[in-house]
Image 1 (cartoon, protein in one colour):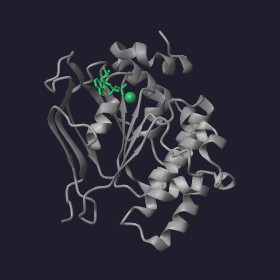
Image 2: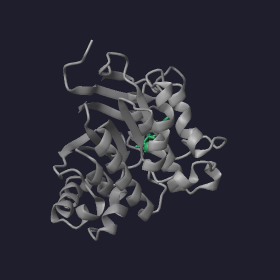
Image 3: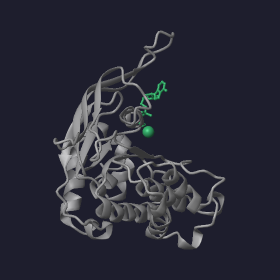
Length: 275
Ligand code: ADP
Ligand code: MG
């Protein structure tokens, strides 16, 4: 049955407490009383300091982690089948024994919704989309960290998921590489309009990428506020950074989250907004 509502993900009063499984030990509330919806084709960023439960929340959305209370509802895909959820992690997301091409290819070969005859052209398209033609036959140990994340991104988009969950995929990259990967992600998203939930602790990254930013409080994570980012698309990082709208938004969010600011300081410092 085709889904007629626009919400693709509905989170309702979701709470996760670790350690309440009957075993002894301290109870740790990862996140608490989260309610929000993600529309089809929307790019959502979850922004919050380290330890506020972002990774646990993504795992709960992907059904890799059971919430303690509340519910996650995922609408069926356009074809009526169960939605296919892809994930991109901080690192170690690709297989060291497979080449760049093989890493992108293997998910497609196991995806019943992708026609075998289309696999070569999809793989070629994404290898070149992420600029890795010359490295297609290389193994992960022969390429840089930024290139590995390009492979992860290519692989997840090539597999044509209904929903893509990304957990701080650029956090370990230097700032120049991070910018180029943000630019690449904007570019691929513009072409595919996938529903994306992207976790970050970087205010600028959230503004660059998101249609809406869900700002979380520090541990335990609750929703502090939800911010619309009305920046026009298609977006280009270098253009955005030159506008006053961009810097105003950094200020606005910085002021809103002044309580959580210590964790988000490195970002603010780089834009001269410390203090
Ligand atoms: P973030 O991704 O925002 O940094 P996490 O979701 O990784 O935060 O963790 C949120 C909180 O839950 C932290 O206090 C963390 O120590 C705790 N936590 C995460 N995973 C587990 C686990 N498997 N068992 C117990 N506590 C956990
Ligand atoms: Mg995390």
